[in-house]
Amino acid sequence: MVQNHAVAEELAQEVFLRVYRSRSTYQPTARFTTWLFRIATHLALNALRDGRNERSQERLDGDTSDMPVRQVSDRRPSVEQSMVYQAKLDEVRRAIATLPEKQRAAVLMHKYEEMEYSQIAKVLSCSESAVKSLLFRAYETLRARLAHMA
Image (tube, rainbow, N blue to C red; front, side):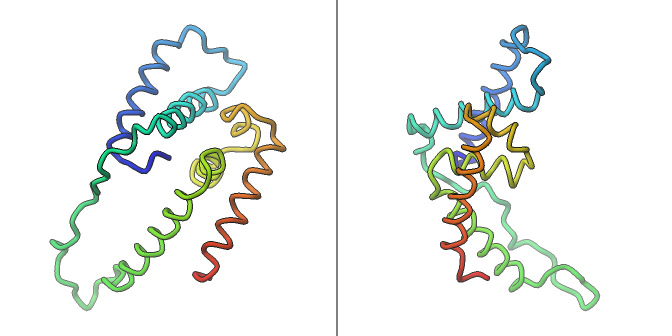
């Protein structure tokens, strides 16, 4: 959500620190993952709102230049296939990053964390119908922005 690996790591540490500090207030009536995602989402939204993720965004990806020479029996994707895949992935990530904060949060929880509408609603403090509306608008926006990739 914050589009910066270092900031995400800091926020993850803060999430677990808050979970530990608030462990006595956790009520088993709610699923633990819902409670955890609620804390994480609120911290991420606060960080975005406060502008804490505006530090220089350096890539922490590994360098692929030291990959072994491809042999005939190698079934891994070619360099070209990997580059095309990475370009598409980057374009999808950029499109998701341009969504409004709540829509982006809903999409990330729905698609990447495979959370149910009810869980997302609890995390975002809204109704299930509001989550459905957020997701509908987000997916329509993404469909329009990424139509050229189909």
